[in-house]
Length: 212
Image 1 (cartoon, rainbow, N blue to C red):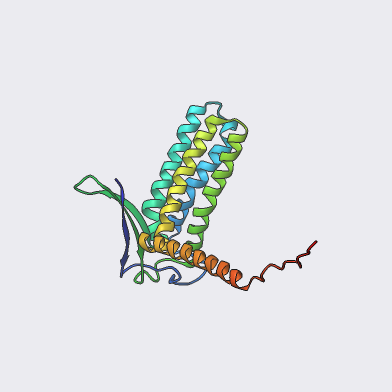
Image 2 (cartoon, rainbow, N blue to C red):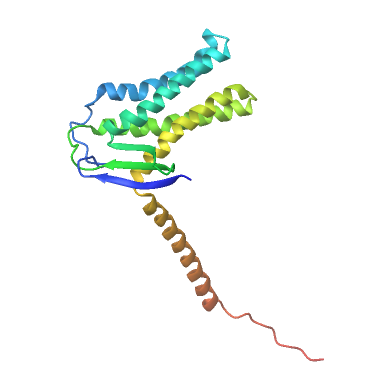
């Protein structure tokens, strides 16, 4: 059974909104380039592979390789360097799988720029959305072999998106408690509203009884 390990806070890492300036400049241009390169390349190959080859197998292999390289690069390199986040998994001695979500705070000022952070999060959200639209197109056009390719793209890009959102939001326990408190607040508000309406509701009026 898999179990979640809470987010780890490191004193020598970067928090959101603490990026050093100058604005508009990239402190890690090569990391930013490779953060975008493989995901853009996989999307371009998917759209244009029919122009260069009629072989589905070769196109499938190329696209999956590009998607895998993108997944590995974003998960292990660009997320840690561009925004100070990291998520990973390990197996303990008892054979249980543990997921760790880390957010770096404070100590990396001057190493990233605000533009890098915007590029990272924008691409992280945009590409899974694009692949999701392409998945719907493939399904509704009954093109199931390409739908399988797009489903792999949605899974890999969506996994990175989910992992970094977990890093961004914080501890899994705090997320769960936030949803619980929100739900409890809505229930209490609805109960209070029902009780108020019950006491303030005007009693039903009955007409005068008539006797024959």
